[in-house]
Amino acid sequence: MVVDTPTALTYIAAAIAMAGGLIATGIAQSGIGAAGMGVVAEKPERQGTVLFFLVIPETLFIFGFVVALIIMLGILHP
Image (tube, rainbow, N blue to C red; front, top):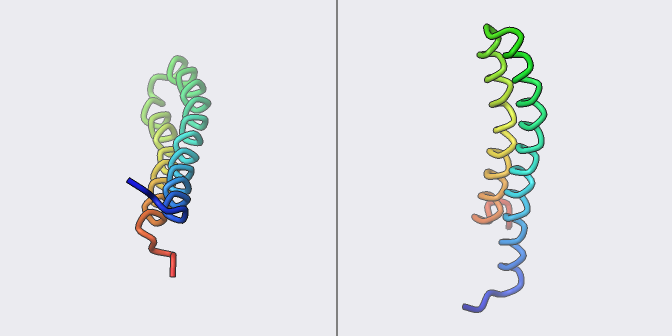
């Protein structure tokens, strides 16, 4: 299968968008998870709040996925 250069660059751009979102989510969750475990160890009634804060960085993954989808579908390309 032969792919032309603009198509290959589109695939690379979509992969970078997804990878950026995933890496940012991992970095954010590592810090929040470590701090959250300390909070739950001291005050178990705060477990719901910690879980909420742990889920918030998942939006970075969703944003990366949406950007990659926009790139792959060519929605913003005239």
